[in-house]
Length: 107
Length: 113
Image (tube, rainbow over all chains, first blue to last red; front, side, top):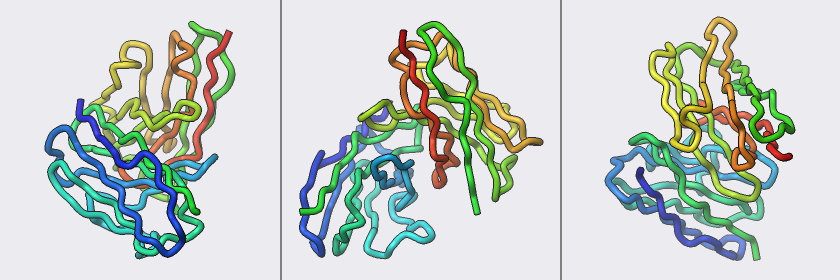
């Protein structure tokens, strides 16, 4: 099973700051890495698919990079509505797996 | 607009069964592999099962293998998850998801005596 390790687990950030969340895979997964945002009481919403492909309707302040085992989600200019938990997800091999999540709080 | 609507959750006792459904709209359901993913209260996301577009391939997480059965009816744009011999550890919100973009709103399954 491919283990995805996200860091940090929690981040408290001031609006307009840059946020960087990393996801490390226990083995190479190519670019089969996706990022989701989940707010309390809601289902996960796709932000970035295949490491760096933006999803329709997602604000341009969200971007993704990486390949192989190391991936990054960047939020350039955090807004209050971005308070949420962020998950990475690999679809390169079964079982598909998710990172443990990064909770982003607005200061 | 892509929509996925789950139903069938509820409160059951350990050892009982439940069947979840997911109705899809806004896309050609029969062309897509589909997933079930669950989330225990206050916890992270766990992939449960996958079914190919034609139902020829089905895969399960080790935690549910032998107890859960995934199926679909392409004529009715529907995805199912038959859950047997449920345990308290199966308590979660269950989501159907189209890889790797759209998710339903989820249906809560609570297993408790």
